[in-house]
Image (cartoon, rainbow, N blue to C red; front, top):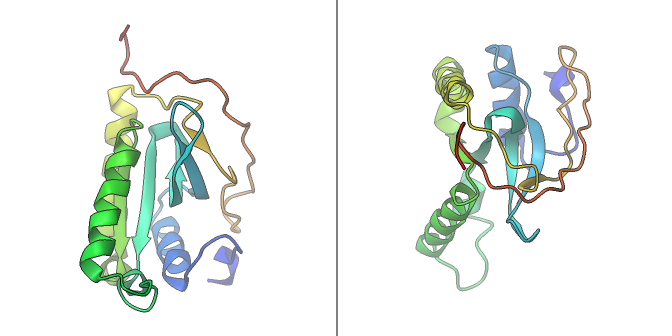
Length: 165
């Protein structure tokens, strides 16, 4: 697991999930990707991103619903905010996949879900609008995948299916 060590993940669960997915043959994600709207405003920062397919991923640890609650905030408040955040991400033409502690116990099933989603998005011919995706743009370093820094995306084209006008 030391080959998967990286400073960008914000929780042990994120790191473990990424390692499990890669060990199951999934492509290495970019980490802590920032999603922007068409005006360049931050919509969300996501744990994982697969730019070519327009997919972002989130590891939902229990911390989000427990010890990280702000004073006066309820679990219901957090769930509502997460639903709104997810809708805002999808409004940018991206798809989101969520992972949890249960996926750490069944990494093959999680990898199958991810690969199915990535394949589906690739077959659809959808492309990510360059102005939508920002952030560290760095693929996690492992013994199996090199560091890869991508360009800053600066055009404001929306996500469009093939042959759309």
